[in-house]
Length: 223
Image: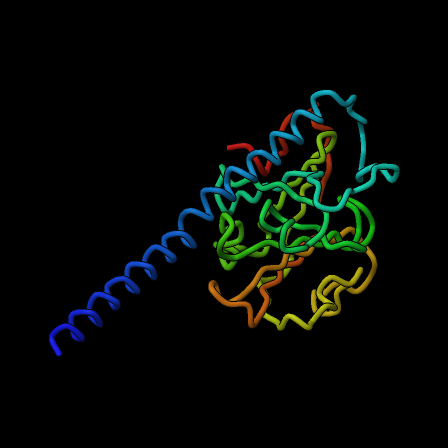
């Protein structure tokens, strides 16, 4: 009997240790790896931009430029989430893509273009890019660059809670956003609650201003 009790106790300790290790892996190690991957994506973009002649006075990503699936094409900054917060934006929202950064919904508008430029990101795991998503407020800036132009969007509504099947949130004119006519919009989406995916949190923003990168950082990014 004592042998059985001892064996069960040892098994419980082993299982408990494995659970702790798994939690550490999910909370810490996947985040460390994701941060390195996202930094690499940004480094790749910056090297590309350094060897590409800028297109001054651009107001949207050039129509001739193709967003390649799974590849980065822009960097996003959200001052509300911290002045060191910056994440790469890649084309597509597949599982593999979202492990590398934020993902642009295929079929939605181009960066800075007419329509609704829509982006998804993990709330937790893989670097927790949108962990503090609920902190976003109306008037907050969301700034992106494609290496030639700075695009500053201003949040108009959100975080708005909905269900995953509510795909209207990325329509060219999202019905629940409050917008009533075509424009140059941005939608950000993430999961809710933090460790679940039963719902989605949404914010909507409009394009407030653009400026060439050679003019320096936009006001929203100046400390």
